Length: 108
Image (cartoon, rainbow, N blue to C red):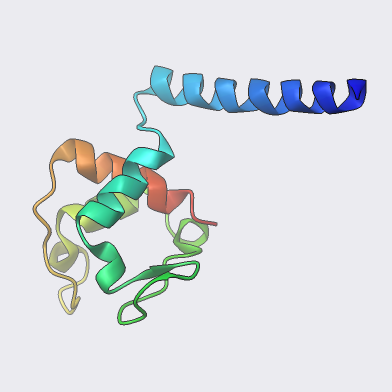
């Protein structure tokens, strides 16, 4: 029982420090980006895990391939990054771009 409490305390400490690090760095928490992904309907063309529609690329491991800053530039204007891109330019606030880029960068 004591071991379970110690493990639970360690998990909570790591989760708290990650949340605090995000808050200090000005980075949005991953759940905010997940909310943007759903609200903007990204799942209509992309999948993450088993969620979404496989029309566009699977984004389950996109963070292993691209850095967060590149993903933010892509989200601001896909055609500027790749003129032949089929992805439309989304109407996102800068806060939504940062949140979604952070969420996608965490997909590894």
